[in-house]
Every structure is written in C-alpha cells, then in structure tokens.
Length: 308
Image (cartoon, rainbow, N blue to C red):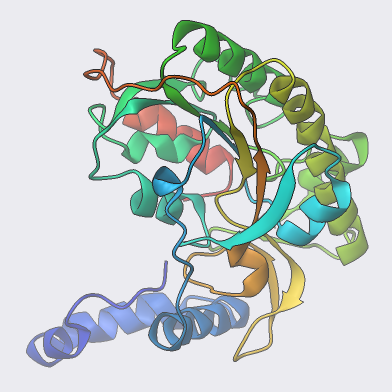
C-alpha cells in the first residue's frame, strides 16, 4: 500500500507539486501506526528478502493451501499423517503469492479450486480449469466461503479431473473467524490500511485463541478430504499471520499479513507431505472455456474481507 512509485526521485524532481501531494496523502493523512508500518515495508523491501518457494515445481498431485497459516500453529494443532517440514513463502499476502506462483505461466495440467478472491488476478488461460467459489458460495453472515463448501468442490474436482494436479485453496484460518469466540472477535475488529486493528475490548489472547480455533475448524475438513482423495498430497499455506509480534526495525505490533513485511512468522509456512504409491497419471490439456472471475464481484469480496 505504501510502496514508492517507480523512479520516485526523478518523478519528484520533475513534478515537485505532485511529489508534495503524494507525500501529503501518504504521510500526513495516515496515523502513526500506518506511517511506522510503511517505513518498515520500505526497509524490508530494500534490506530483506522473501522466500523462494515455487509450489508448481514441487512434487505433488494435490496441493491443499490453508490461507494465512503459521508454521508454529500448524505444527501444534495439526494431527495429520505425513512428514512435516517448513518452507519460506515468496510473499506475505495472497496476491503476492499468486503473482509469484501462477501469473504468467501455463499450468495446463492443473485445476485450481479456490475460495480466495485474489484469484480474479489470474488469467483464464493459466490453468486447465478454475473452480472459484467466491461468488456462488460466499456466506454473507460468515463473511467468507465456508470450508465445507470448498471441501465439497475439491471432491468433485478430483472426480471430474482424475488426470490433473489439483490445488485446493481454503480461506481459513484467515479472518473472519468461524467459532463462537472467533465471531465475537471478528465482529469487533477495526479495519484500516488493509489490515485489522484491535479495539480495547479485544486482547491479543482473544485474537490468538480465535485464530487457533479457526485453524482447527479448517483442519477438520482437510483431514476428512485427504482420506477421500488419491495421489501424493501436500498441505501448506500461501503465507503466515502476525498475531501481535513486534515488527522491525520500528517495533510496532504486527497484525494480520501486510504486504512486503518479511518477518519469519509471515514467510515460514508448513509443508506437510503425505506420500502414497497410488500416484495419479498427470497430463496437460488445453484450458477449458471459462469466464474470467468477475472483477466487480471479486473486488466486493475483497472489500468484505477488509481489503480496499
């Protein structure tokens, strides 16, 4: 959100009035927290690097992504078969992950089943097929696509595409939180600067409990799904989540998952491999005719999730 434009110095010299307006809008109108976060983002971009995970080059038949899942919480909560390790994500939010892993590629041996509104950024010719639930299965009361609907769509995709790699992208444990306590927390969060902020009524303990409960909710559906599908399965995430850790170099408390903040809890994601001798015979086919995900509807969903 606070990235400097390309060639910022030369543009500022050629258009001082425009440069002043940019600084005025970006700094003077933002509160101290967002200014500090912006400075951290600038320094992170210049002095730190994200990870290099390229999920499409990894070995799997089904890749299950649970959105905004931290490695430490996953290792504590997940009771799934397989071998667990960690990977470093190339981005600290979904859009960056999608750009680094999918956009500009031909992935015609893969079907993408997703509840993530940022899928609207993916060209319809990228995958063999995209099964998006962001329009027809969005639950306005919950503020998200329920995990059970995404799991059902994943089962159907495995039946319909037995010779394709399949990516299944759940939205949980990403907020909104679905447990009773989690809904209480979500109802009270304040959104500003493309992230949530805690009001006085919500403590960090409340937030962390809501996040862990949301992770347990989605893991229930992941566990059921992996028992019903064949092939080698990997369970991972697009990025992690800040739950009150101090950022650097300005030590403000971090919340949610702002772009270009390269803290370990945002980049370190689980990589659970569930091997099998029953591998699928994968082959590419031309993309199916499909409608591009409606940008207006996707933008509405992103706004409902707190993104401007």
